[in-house]
Image (cartoon, rainbow, N blue to C red; front, top):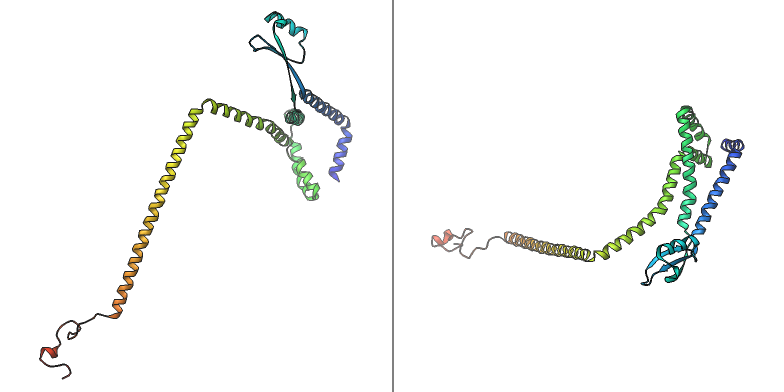
Length: 277
């Protein structure tokens, strides 16, 4: 309720000023729209050519004015000795230019005016009291406000110059960035067409280097696979060898008949006695 009351009191106190500002903005927007409409539509252009077919003079419109005719005949001679050609084309409505002008010009003008007023107040009167009052009133408004009122209070405390600057930057970017992209693309195509052999050679060099890197990576991957296969082969051989050695150890050593554990002749045989006697 407090914000609505403050807004209504402000409108009631500055009603005349607000009406003047609104009327001025309406007239500015109307003029911008009229200029955009005048720049669009069907446009005619009158060209004057010499005997070789070269354009030596051109002007907007379907006819030459008296001043243009006088200037032309004074410079090139009688008009009857030249060929006149009329060209017409359909120009679409410049939406981007109209949008940028309709938003950017009023916002920019208000920002400049607000900056001048704020600078005057800061230089000659100072804004210490205003900033202190804003700091004291901020927490109270945050505590009282809820929902939509809190959002409106937070938005109202934002710096209007930052908001206006962001709006102007966004609008200018909407106008500049597409034109910049078109200009860079057109310039790049013209440059590539003019120096096509250089770019073709550079492309072949880059392609050759890329293929060479791919081939080296292929050889490296192949060698890595072969190395891993050899390592796996040796590991399997070592595993099989260990398993065979463990099996022979469990079976024990084989001794020929008539020999002892150490392969020597038995003591009985050595004494000429048969075993078991």
